[in-house]
Image (cartoon, rainbow, N blue to C red; front, side, top):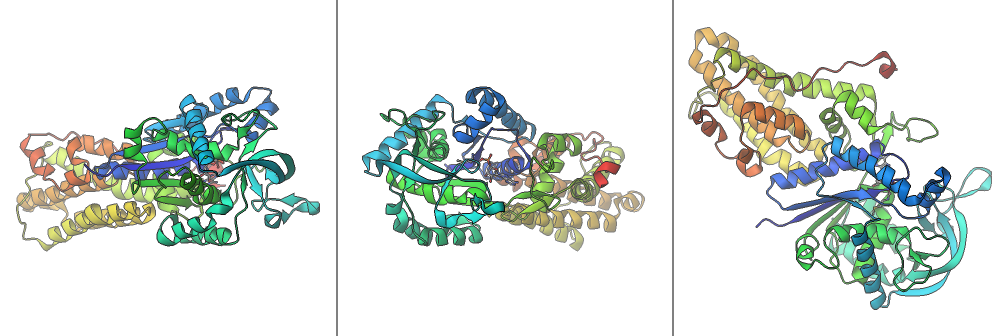
Length: 525
Ligand code: ME8
């Protein structure tokens, strides 16, 4: 049995509708989850919404509705976005769900049993926008001398009775963790940032609130609700079966398991400091990696509601196509760095790579076969003596069997796509050089050999790119008759082509995969 693989996105605050940053994280995580499934792994992929805390309570109050009503409404938009973008989550968790409350309370009880929770008075700075506490020394000065968090959000002075978690006790264990597992935090820039923060000393963390009640109740805690990040982080355990389902835990949250959290760079501290400390305290296995991806900017500028440049991912997907958007985001942005999007950039990328290169390759090859061989699959010549054939087969195999999977395993989708495109270019160069249309009259046997090489190559390219553009790849593979068993890394190496020929499959005239996109005048702006 292949080792199970647990992968998660952050869970989003449903205080408003999803934006393109949320879509980006979901798409990248989905590509990795699909890739691991293709590798034959038993994948558990979780995403969802983070519904408690002051930010939600305030947003609901501003609309004159209950927090749960706001969460119900907005969480539905997040799920709708995921479904529209073909996000293959196994569970969409909502932190208002009863099993999640149980898991959070169990984690709390385990930390308490370990002597890591105590009651005291909290006095300090809090940012509602970040749902985060800050030390005085971290604050920066804003306009008119106002105090701001390091993220630039307003902070307020808070005084209340609170439970505390002995985070200070975990400074050394955390540093030991980062040293013994250098990949625990990635990319390296984030790792360095976190190491510096932890080396600077950790204060105990206030983990409960009494000034509002929209949260998970502290066990036997009278009027205390948990600090939203305690319950939010616990979502990963809830989905893995904690605390009741030992069998599920043994699969998806085991010591030495592959447990990957994909999150944005702004919340690495919560995932790489607080989270492993909570887990150590509760004596639970730790995730294997926390990857902090970059931020998506609108034409290089930060998105903000007040500037009015927050893109709706569903509108973008409707306008440009789901796979076009997925492909753009994963190819354009080096995973881990910030990236920028604009209508021109999406159109440019989708047209050049998908419509003109891959789509055109498939279209011209398949329509030629449909027309000239009446859909019969061309004879593959065993051990062709043509160097060009060997060369192309080598390039395509190398890309599809080795390079694309290696880069996807290493969380580098843009490099995976570059390797894939290199093979697509090689196919286009091959078809131009071999000119099967000319061979039709002069050497029909050679024409068939060339077409068979191309059919194989296109099939492999479509199989390898499934994690990035799943619907288009499936559409092409369906048209080509490639059986479901071949659509994995093991199947890729099988002789599906010979089997398909033997089955007497007939190719119908292909339907175009990627329409050429045109920019409107407004978009070109
Ligand atoms: O932080 N580009 O929720 P959230 C790329 N509930 N990613 C972005 C982004 C952008 N412009 N803006 C936000 C929360 N993100 C918490 C998480 S996890 C236990 C709790 C990313 O709705 C952000 O970094 O503010 C985070 O990973 C995710 O979107 C949800 O952000």
